[in-house]
Amino acid sequence: MVHSNGSAKPFSEGMRRSSLGVNEFSSGTVSTPGAADVDVDTLRLNFSHGYFINEAIEVGGMLGYSDIDSGGGSATQYTIDAYGRWYFDHQARLRPWAQAYIGMGNNDPGGAAADRDLTEYGVGLGVSNMVSDSTSFDLGLDYRMQTMDDPGGDVDTDGLYLTAAFSVFYGN
Image 1 (cartoon, rainbow, N blue to C red):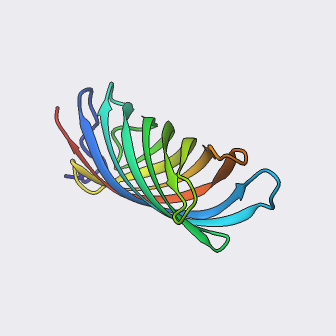
Image 2: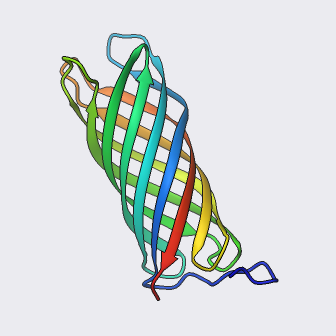
């Protein structure tokens, strides 16, 4: 329940958060050695689960599935990340946060091309709008970087993701 003064139930140590989100890769490039940079468009679905180690800091894991279109080709990508998120205000209705994450995954360009292992890392800023004591709608902007192993040389991508997610808080 969001109270009349605009506050909601504060986060506490031991609390958990599960979230389902959609990311749209709005601005990015793929850089391959010996080739021109290519613009990319990515739609990514995420499921994350976190644990509050205190009232302001959450740590957790994230699973991602991406559908990627770039330069006339397409790829499917699966990732697993570890993240940390710090909430600037853990008692207000609007709770701004900053996060960092690192992970690994697999990029499947389809056809005869070989799958590529990848590493990714990034940072983000956002806000959680507490619609009740146990649910929020989250908006964020992430800057994500990836390096994919490729026989012709590593392939690097980077760009901005606009993120929208629905979160459920429980425990403690």
